[in-house]
Amino acid sequence: MTLSPLSCFKAYDVRGRVPLELNLELVRHIGLAFAAEFAPRTVAVGYDVRHSSRDFALVLASALQDGGADVINIGLCGTEEVYQAVAGQGLEGGIMITASHNPKDWNGMKFVRAEAVPVSADSGLRALHDRILAGDFPIALRRGGYERKNLRKEYLAILLGFLGLSARQAQAVVEGEGVGLEEGRAILAGFAGFTIVADAGNGCAGPVLEELGRLLPCRLVILRGEPDGDFPHGVPNPLLPENREFTASAVRRHKADLGVAFDGDFDRCFFFDESGVFIENYYMVGLLAQYLLGRSPGEKILYDSRLTWNTMEMVAEAGGTAIESKTGHAFMKERMRAENALYGGEMSGHHYFRDFAFCDGGMPPWLVLLGLLRERGVPLSALLDDRMARFPVSGEINRSVADPEGIMRRMEAKYAPAAKAVTHIDGLSVEFEKARFNLRMSNTEPLLRLNVESRGDVALMESLRDEILAEMV
Image (cartoon, rainbow, N blue to C red; front, side, top):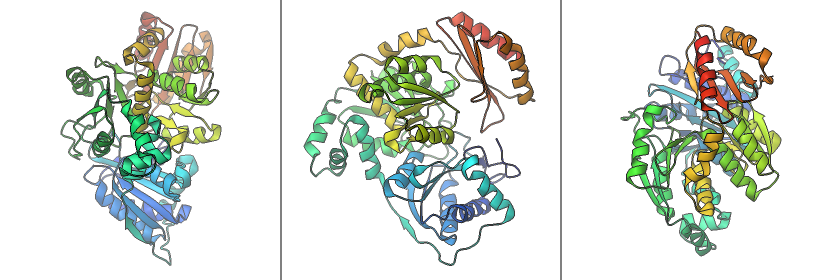
């Protein structure tokens, strides 16, 4: 959904080409509007590796100060580090300068309020848009302060909690001293036998991985760890099949137990098994949910509408309650809080944790998975091959079309009469006895997105997929 005439305002973030859709003047207006709309005392600002990001962050910080807010600039970081700065430091707002996986000449912003509650079109982003159009962003009588602050240690301690360390133990391990140091290191010693290949894609994940590598006893092989806004190997987006072989081959070459790759601001992660096979995140959602439910029985788990059957089955088997939610990080986090859900996952690679301020992050999922692999003592493929056979999927297929809304109506008219169920939680979901599909319009790009799955019947899944694609013209 675009909030025109400012085309860079999307459903749950700001994102556009620089300087055509997003420039320094608009960044300043956004900062002033944020300060006027939410009146935060203190705002955390972070930025990704894109060449425009640092200047955007400085202009944004100055505008927030002019609007009366104090600013903590945490520097080059991942989006989740801004979330954790807000939640962990008790701040009233946070803004991350990033365009995630979009081309290198794009940039954007993601916004949160106190406790890292997301700002979407329905919870303040439209109000910012309207303030800018009206010129309603006054200069405050008191100019806010400014501080550069490194919060990486606090963030690393939170990450170590996903490997089973208490807050005290994690802090001691990160500091290298203190009460709980030996207990924390003893817990981590149980991971010493693992080899993990981690591909940062020249985005922001590299520095965090380097620091984790110094804390963990396992072998962590970091690929393309140097942040580089030129993205010499292409913009990091492991959802694109052509971007996966580099990571997959490294997994095989290093005989790794696990491969993980990140997008530019590392709020998403993607997995490869010990043979270098790319694992659709759909299957990871069910696996992580089941593992976490083993430690917290009876909790609620969120999943998105695109692919559902495997997650529903695995959550039910583990005694949890599965709840379907609209796709999108702002929508998922709002629902996570409303349900007090333990965990939520999207097939796009976003994973949300109650113990991570209900936020998504790219680092927690692979650490949770490492704990699962240690507990089960079997390769990742042994945990997933059966699930993949039980529920084969098409993978997300994107099509640029002239009349997306018309195609959606036509697809419903064609398939709804014979369907077992039709829902509109997010786009159009049509369920038959042995197959289902979801067709939805992208929230960030002019595309229709199709996902198809079946109950153990690859031929049926492929036939339905091809039939729908032939109609999407």
